[in-house]
Amino acid sequence: MWGYTLISELELDASGAYVATPELLSRIVSELQCGLPLSDRPYREVANRLSISEKQLMNLLRGMLRDGSIRRIGVVPNHYALGYTHNLMTVWDVDDLHAERLGQKVGELCFVSHCYLRPRANAWPYNLFAMVHGKTQTEVDIQKQQICELLGDTCTDYSSLRSTKILKKTGLRI
Image 1 (cartoon, rainbow, N blue to C red):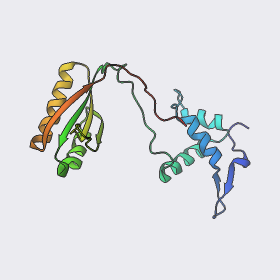
Image 2 (image 1 turned 30 degrees about the vertical axis):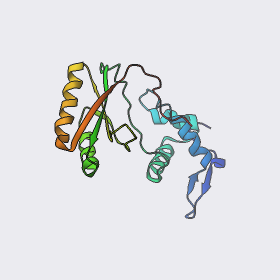
Image 3 (image 1 turned 180 degrees about the vertical axis):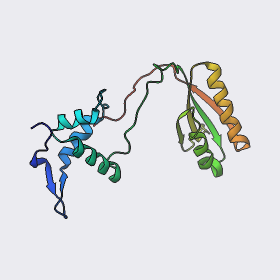
Image 4 (image 1 turned 60 degrees about the vertical axis):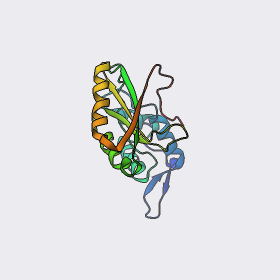
């Protein structure tokens, strides 16, 4: 039944409106977790595979975003294919009183793809982590220097961890 939801996958809510069953929501997640199809109408293709309309899929996705079932739908570019072959996880020992505020500023830098606050561990004094990507070693060195200047005297030490090999490049699969 191309384009129509099976009634067995819909339930009535308190207002009498149809809502998706947990099974349909699980199928939606399974369909989307490996990415959208590369086409002019990717959501229509997914909806067709689920035997629901594109409009129903979009409404269900909005609801799932609202209730937190899914956090976001976004593009994940392959930075290696785009020429960003120099990757550096920078780690910083930032004064805890300023770490959250400064971590937010570091995370807003256009060249930072990931930024985290982590608890310090034994001989590991670093609490702020920021991943940077560049096309040259010089580019990532300049980026590291920009972060250093932004953190100023709230940072007492820093180091860098270089990517040497990709072991896994996928998110959680359910």
